[in-house]
Image (cartoon, rainbow, N blue to C red; front, side, top):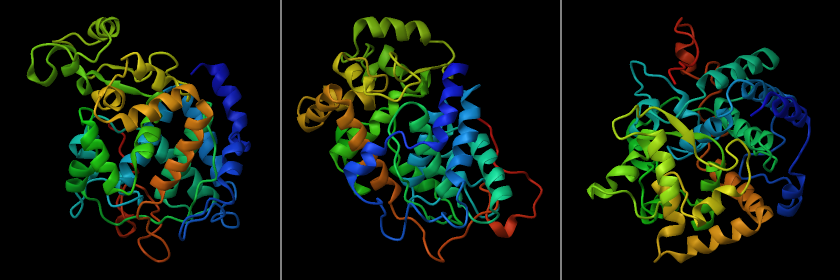
Length: 350
């Protein structure tokens, strides 16, 4: 994102860009014990603080929005939206950060660190790390030109992590459509949710390691993935040589990489989905319910935005800890009973 777009996006921290979608969905969008008004009296500027820090981060890291929404997604799919993905290794915790689907793909911990520090200054021991991820996901989408919505809040933080579940329940970049549907169904999410949430790949980046097999040895065939557009294939082979650096990153959306729009879906229609799990939504012939949704979102960005908001709220309501369950971590990287250790806040290895 250019500095000019970052500057203009900062002003949106006080605006509800996507108010239309809130109105269409009706009411406050509260779910269970979560409520958009949860911090109205205890930390009324929480969302503005989160937005301001993300807007500043965007000036030097155009991919941070995609990274933050990915953290929220990878948190919610493991034991629910409880901030467990942020916990570091300790004597009793095996960090989810080191699970196979996370170790090379999740980042943004430093920005979460900055957000938590600012919120602890403004309203100590009030805003959970799980809620920080939920707010950050919404603000990231809004700042990139996507919809805004009233985030349901009131989650509390887990005191445990589950690396085994992270290895099991997080879909990988080579997942088939059948596998994706099964994983989403387990979380109470349907095919529309799958397609809508996959649309978050309209911004962000991916490492060569996540798709290089498609370029040279798809399914151990010795040939490229036949569902890849041949021109796009050549472009990707130039970015990711067969024996090159697999940590090189490229845009998930080659058309408008830093804008939240519906171009992700039109890319799928011309066989330019970067990840196998992306292209599966359109190129799996016997699963045409996903194809119909892709076509609809390609033709109607408003429909995509509205569905995305609904699906994000559904995902954010997966098994939250509320009431007196869990805790409000003072440091997102460790549980409170270890808070006197001098090992810093979140480690930022990526």
